[in-house]
Image (cartoon, rainbow, N blue to C red; front, side, top):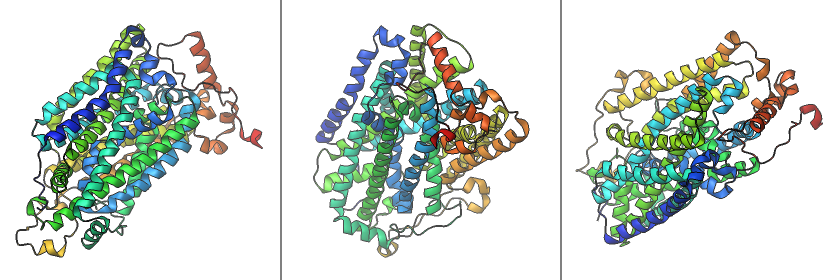
Length: 599
């Protein structure tokens, strides 16, 4: 029996395994929902949005993994490897470098200032209008990302069981929206921990069973090497090649930095921990978990390729394959190895990844709407009970919008590239604005706004242009096939539907380079405009607003004013505490050690 990419089906054992694991993963969220839905918890926005700033390190680390290692990664990465080889695997180097930069450049600023929202920093460094622009970009980013998170598990469920994609997506949103809207961050974090564990169980079982089904590790490596899918030797500087070493490492590094550094979904979890040390520990666990998950998914893609070659290279499974690869491979392995329940465990893992990413984003969006747009920009405050209901309403509305957008996402192909390209629009511009604030002391509101608009426009035009070209038929050709496949009379190579030379060059670049392009445009335009158009505001010259990496090069007045803004915030909070208290760290000294004092 060969692998043909048409496999599917769900047995009784699969339904039992899937039902038990999903019920177990959601139990914690529903329990916290029951606790959090009481009137006292509705009033306490601090507890709802930040978990009472007393979360434990490991659950938060698991929630960090869940935030961006979603079903998109689980289904998209094996298909990418199947089509284009293991060059994408080098993105784990970019992930590692990203975590080092976040821990040394960005995270210390958030922990020192004790903020409740990452975008609150932009009001302290620039003004409330810059804060609003970044907040709106974040919401735009998540509106584009959420449908992808829902679509991938729904697609897998559809392929294995035949259930309608939209019905499955609606059920996901209903379950996830319930415990997210009622339980807040505590429900999200603890449920994420369980769902992330189930996700890893599913991937590990799939990788192990798939390897055994095709003959072992050596067989997978030999088959992949013959077709060139094991080589990491493409170090071309061309941005038009879909997968290169530089694209995976440099592009992956900057893409993940844009998300891990300032994105509210991640920062909200960093600052829910009581100390900076615990936040860095959680970030380290996230780094290891993300690298492990990506590596397993790459291996699953190689195992599926080996199964297809061994089965005679059926033309129905010839590259380019879509994101239905792994569900089909799971069914193939389950039947060939006689492992009832394997498909159910795998699907539970995909669902767990999707639900955890969905809940993480929904909770972060509620915080941004209440804290950044309503409190920070519009200067509007209601009674705590009203604000609690409003935060939950935002969660519900975004969940519904995500389901409706499935109609659009269904028309696109290759979820990994699509998700990376679309989410890079806002992420790169937002990260660029924060980088200007933390590293360029001469940049003011004009430079920040000009840079953010330039970066968002460039990344947006490029991203949407690449998706339009893909919809028109532009596809990067897959790697070569084995000699046996090439001689297969039933195999025919699909012709590209469009000539690449007829496409505008900017719309042909790899999705790896969209985030770097937007980030570079934001920082470059912002730095230039800030130098010529912004006037120095002495009230913003506080060393704690800048990354500690650059303290020795800051103007002397920055060092002299170090800690002033934080002390003013602390006094303001004592005199007039807000319903959503922004205190994050348990204790913090009022004096910042200056370079001269360290000698």
